[in-house]
Length: 236
Length: 311
Image 1: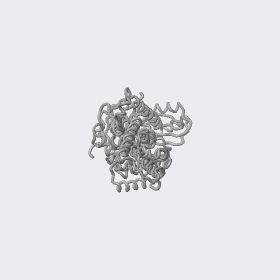
Image 2: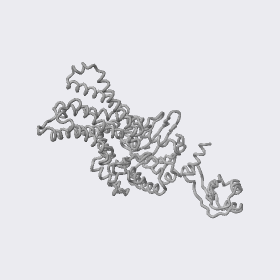
Image 3: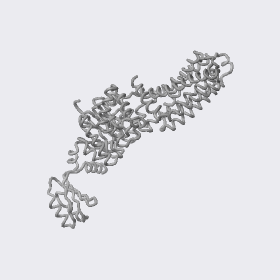
Image 4: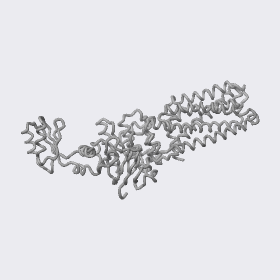
């Protein structure tokens, strides 16, 4: 566990907060849209965490992760730091999980920040003094869903980063992959007969979504762990 | 530890039909700087990767610090320090954070880490720049920092892969001096790959020469000089011509003669006198300005070995 924390520490210094305020522009822009603009546009409806609001929140991790995760392995390779790291005693799993956890925490943190900021702003400016809070069950589900989507994005990002030569390539593939994923999900949802959805409550639908995401996370994380091999990386 | 700190037995690594390391059997005793010499692409870096357990050998076996590279690579990597082909520093992080990261990897307690970082950076005159992002540093400073990183956790053995490659002569000499003083102070064994023969000559107690994956020879520099070349005379002057060379070659005490610009290098058989040879040169029309007696340099040894391999 201490090895994973060491990697998280290093990632936070080297990648997440490396460029001072410049590196925060993109995540803060996302928080500005998701935590300020949209909540003020939606008004009290935002606090209900409707399906549309929930779907919008799930974009946050993708936006944040695309900026950073490509750097995970491809960045180390590009800057010639990977070989030295691989020659150290740091276990494979700690390297990989440290990079994933650092990115997930960052993306999830941005999601939570957007949720809380949105709530405060709606309460301050759009509820005429009637203080509201997210329905607790939906708030917890939102936190879990943002976490699961963060893990999905980070695992996919690391998998791509393991296979490409440059950070730019990784970011491009991840951007295209995100669009394909979103369109794929939309296509699948549209293909499901309408009566299936009408028979499900909102809570049931969210539970199914969480289960599907958890399975996808497990598969991608497992693939990333299997793919991370020192001998293969040293030759690449 | 008793016995060699590195031992390889018929170690080989092939990439398809390319034999990067071919039947390498080698023993490196503890406490010395061992130079692994070879031209580019000779298999030096692959050998280091094999010794660190980063690559599986195709054939043969190796042990480092008594641990098998195939099955106990983690134990090896825990105990060694490495400065590989690139400095491997995180350029957006400060010098202090770079060392701190590797100290944490080695599970050094925080207080010990801080003290050791201060000790090494002070010794290398980098302490005042410890808060700078490494990306703003010169190449020489980065390489010194990488040496400090390799030594941070008091490893008994460090691997240095061409540490002065691409440096100008002054920077290379400075780094070499820092390296020599640190190695002597820390008492570590060093496995140094290089194609810089001056570096090997100055730092190494023993050298191995590798070419196309095959170990050509191993020994201390003096032994190698004796094995591949005897005493020499170097004569500097003008007017040396083919006739001069032919006359010298006829002499029984002369093993070989070579002319490079105005330098005549004569390999002697045994401890022969130089005077008669100088007289011969003068009689043949040459003008002698300087005469030096000496031994073959490591460079001569290296070039001889390469030529022998070619033939």
